[in-house]
Length: 136
Image (cartoon, rainbow, N blue to C red):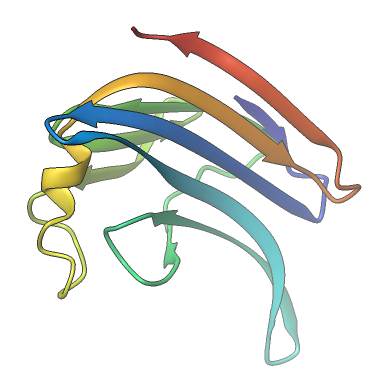
């Protein structure tokens, strides 16, 4: 996915259909950037949220500068890796990097992914919906 940070807000969500014993479920991750005010300064802060692993958004501190960003999001049975402009900005281990209280998150995310969907919103609420591919 490619984002243009001249927009005041970027929001992308990746939905994974995870299948295993007991059926399938849809889980998602969100990566977003919004202009927020800290004191008198306006900053653009990138953050992420992984459903089932934490209750809140977590700040990404090492997103490269530059207006255009090429994102690569990779999910394995153990990790979620996010790279931006060839820099790894997140290497999340489902078994160890969860927030306390979410100890079973790795049991959900280790399931086989059978489908991926992508959703992106920009400031104009333009929705780009793309069925990336089916793994079934």
